[in-house]
Length: 320
Length: 264
Image 1 (cartoon, helix red, strand yellow):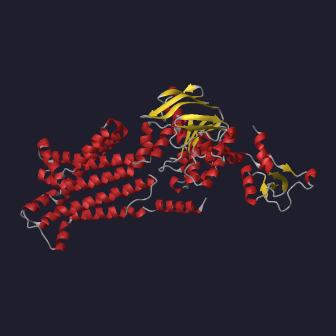
Image 2 (cartoon, chains in turn red, blue; image 1 turned 180 degrees about the vertical axis):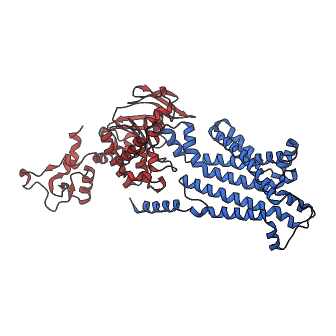
Image 3 (cartoon, chains in turn orange, cyan; image 1 turned 120 degrees about the vertical axis):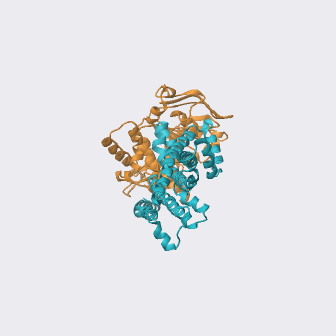
């Protein structure tokens, strides 16, 4: 869907992007991660021609982006930036309607579309009459996402979209965005410097430094990477724990069965974790309570199984 | 959602609600201005002064006021659009050196006294309305030009980046995002320009352009304070009226631009 071929972009003597080859499949969420100044935003902006490469080629849908007039190209690519960039002189609804309006959508379709988009990002359609200054940071970025999706573009470029909201809101926005992405299957290029965010969202992660892609792989494949290398150092030793956030307790729990009702399961006093919690949270609870075994509860609060530490740690071997 | 944003939201609503009776001040000033022009003798009676009559013009005060207003209106009607266009061009083609040139020329010209500009216009355009109009137009451009550049450059970069990234053409970015957001600052420049020119237009009387400067100059020649006041008070009121009116428009533009209601 998106392909970079030997893309180079220099600013003066600095090579911001230094010969990048990278491919992103349709429906894939690719996270571009690296320290600030590594060229990840510059690379992202070559896709919608906000930045023109000095050499090399960027392809969208098999066609070089140079072949499209920039405005037409950009209207078919969703764009979300860290500072949101809502237009303060337009209502929330008018902000969301910008691209459909540029594409000539008629009024009734437009207002229906705005309502749908606001609902998609978890805001009531009545919010369309509000003004950007009345929104909190998290609400503003929801509107930013709704605006980017309004014309139903197949591609979404997201440049640190959740970078300037508080950590709790950030996690909530990430979860909601992931749910949206599972429904819409956009091809997403997502820039961040937050390793946890990359692990939570990515289908594939591309680690970048000094304008080059050092490694491009699925999040679970990184664990084996050399801790001495830059990639290992950047991702950090806690990566092995962070990656557990991608799996839920439900996937590895031992169901309560007749054969287990004997002595093996945890007693009534064992700390309990919900089945939809992540393995990272379960491991955290084990570490905090200094136990190797947790009771697992369903959403209704009934015990449905047990979780042992070896189950948590053993998942690696189960999933290469 | 959370309490903080609810408070902000309530604040935002309160902001938009105010501003209804704001036209009271301009209306009052207009009333006083009209009254002072038509019945200046009432004020003179109250103050217990009366021009000695040596050089009192035969032209009625209201006619001088209209001449004055015409001078300011005509020069602003030329200066504002011209300066706006130059300012937009300066920002749009900022790489070409036009911006640097205009800013440098503008700053240099601002240090020039308006009296000197008027005097220099005489050899170019002769006597009467033309040189005054020319000088006021040129002089009135400076604040508008300055504020147009500052206003456009002060538009949040994120908004411009988002606008471009969503596929607006440069002209659409300008018309739909940059100009509406820069409008309060641009209008502040227009206000400064009008106020300065209302005052500077009194000097036009020395160039034979008439206006409220006529009684002032005659009064200075004949050491007649009462006569000076006949020109000075209406022209000051005219400037105040222009200032108050444009300030209202500016506040309105500021609210439309989504900012907080600024100033007093």
